[in-house]
Image 1 (cartoon, helix red, strand yellow):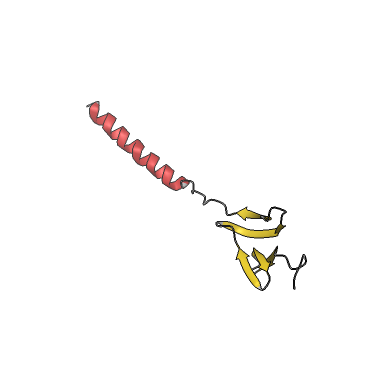
Image 2 (image 1 turned 45 degrees about the vertical axis):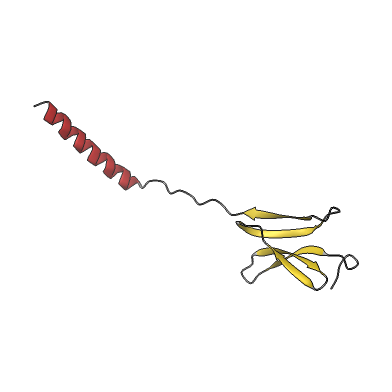
Length: 92
């Protein structure tokens, strides 16, 4: 199957998991395209300058978990006890 009079072309395909990938077909040669750290890549075509055009979705940065409320309360409680004892020792 050729497109554009035998010229190379770029399209997309879906793997068994449903993830989209781009590819370039040039004669019998098929080259897969994936943007690093993306959830999917779609090649839409090749422009007049020979550049592959398309789009991708960047993988979200890992979220830093918020401190657990119980841990915060525990730390505050220990700090309150320590400060209370320290001040009561100074007042003697």
